[in-house]
Length: 217
Image 1 (tube, helix red, strand yellow):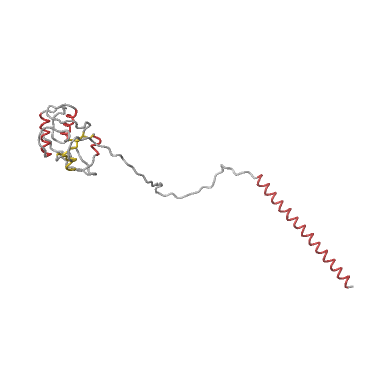
Image 2 (spheres, rainbow, N blue to C red; image 1 turned 90 degrees about the horizontal axis):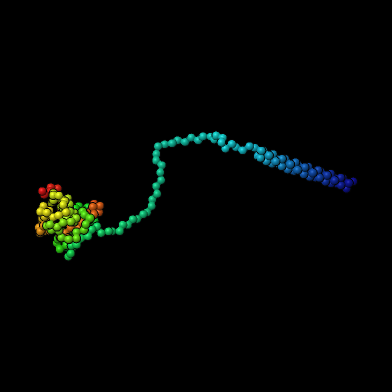
């Protein structure tokens, strides 16, 4: 009797387990079908949904603007170099006995640059280098250049004729007197160094300015 009861009980347990297993499988299949249906519905909605209108008005954004400056700065390292060029040609020969100029100070027409054999060499404006001695009756563009220089520094008030006349000779002597050299009335080629006008404006150095505010008449 007990054996029959145990067999019946075991049979019931087996049937119950089979029923639960079948129910679990059915639930799993139902959930899977529901999930697949949801995915398919999302896909259909996404594909058939119209795209956003690119011309549709977007929401405005407001910001506060204040007074100020907008800019950018860039720092670079640079270097420049200029080749030194001779400003003029001087024919003075002998020993340089003094130098009256140093870098950084402007010189003007009539200033002493240096001395050769104790004779001062003067700077003047002009395109033509001093190539000869200029004495009474000499003529040429270099004479006109000398007359212009003497007028600029206040020793000559006559016409620039390009010829050494008595007025030019007297102006030369007055200029030589103030320089402290013999008053010969002749300007030697080594007495003056002429530099072009543009260059003369920028020459720097330190020297005695012999130009005068009250010219001799």
